[in-house]
Length: 462
Image (cartoon, rainbow, N blue to C red; front, top):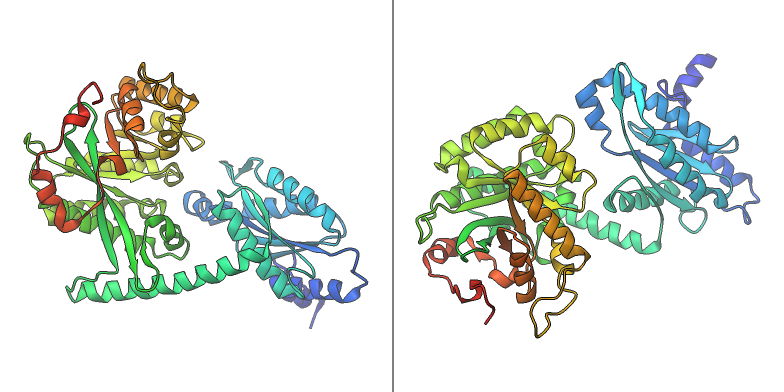
């Protein structure tokens, strides 16, 4: 075997870093070299956030060039004593001999990786997430350290990405629970697919419908269709417990598309409200569904045609994370169908205003954290108190919506006080526990026809 063959066997051709096998061998050699009692080497697992979108939008050649640049920056941050490797496509690892260097090196890596890249005529911006594990408490050998670092890395990604997390023993149990939930989700979706093909309703996944009410007169205007998983052992789980997991393991399109089709079919059978106005249905969509491009537009088109639901009665809700490069083209095509677009969790992302300038939304759904913080000051005997900081933000968003001709919706309204503040500040719609409990699919039609108690919507509280 030649020297070139040895190098190809041990090193990654693209970046020149050790491959996973050689990296693990090198880490084992460091751990066996001792004495390490005072050093406690730390392993950093590094993953590039949403790297696939670069390959999808700019091409594989540009993606490879970015990986080479990232590897070069990692070398520059790691120091001469570090052991470096490319573990898989967009995952890297570093073994630092001295643990006191780990946090500082991690922070330096986050800053270096996030600097823009000019590659093949493309201006590329990317961030990284990092998990850290220290020998021997987090793992006795290379594979155990990598596993612990990857668990910490996952927590960094769950925390919002572009950050670092050190491994903690409690993460291991959470990882085991997540793995069990993943297996259950795969099994449930497999059953769902088979049952749907057999035209038999399966009860593990159901929609609950949350009323959205107009502040001005208390009339029902729409329902938010929320996907729930009726787990055979864990009980009813809301989307926060499993939707992101479904995205990570590649099952969200099956799950999200089923929810879209089911919600449209249900809404098509609803009667109009007592005032004769058609009731809309709101459905969450994932960035992975949008990434399907015209295939997703085709799915929406076919679903509307099959169910007979008028396009204007469907609201697609998405968070800013779904608005990756190319999403605006898909959203413009959806709006051309007559479908409504709602920007969800508004106010907590980094580019809300930029999104409103780039894409024409029909609705802004204010994040519930603003609603919950709005009534930290109780009403006085003389009326409503002055706005809190969140209250001023709500007023600003309300004015923005009015100026843009966009409907504003307050999410998470749980108290009469919150309701009065949101109405005072000029929002159009409200959703939350104060306005009624979620309804099962079979309960919606009759609830639409029931006259609502309008006393609470009078201008003066009773």
